[in-house]
Image 1 (cartoon, rainbow, N blue to C red):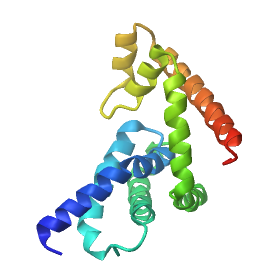
Image 2 (image 1 turned 90 degrees about the vertical axis):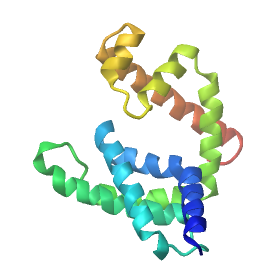
Image 3 (image 1 turned 60 degrees about the vertical axis):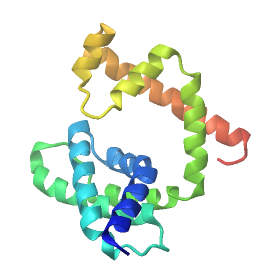
Image 4 (image 1 turned 120 degrees about the vertical axis):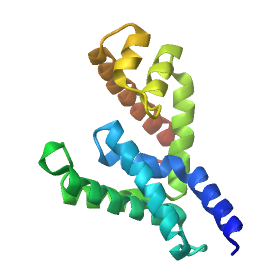
Length: 176
């Protein structure tokens, strides 16, 4: 494969599966800034290792495995100064995420999109801002004219509402 074709294929695969890979990273890292840094390092590692990727294999599973090792590297660097998950939890998530990368994940993503549309404009704005890269919670609170604690509590409630909505949709469609 020519280098320009390799660039295009890499960009296409990362762009089309960014959500799944980032979700895995964000599920394993508490701090948004750390998760964003791990995402960037994962992208670099994916590019450096892309020639080893087998085109007929599952890109998401491969990318999540790379992200897994980037998280381990980050955890080693973070040491005792950060709140991190233990190794067995990360291993369990890695196994689960590989499974979730299947077509069932697409059902969940579709349900999530439908549930997001049902949120009020304010809730959609809060959750959208919360998951915007490089957006600090303090900035969101300032724009929304409330405290940081209110934003965190709102995000917690919205996540809970979304989780219930997704499960109900999947149950109704017999996919849960």
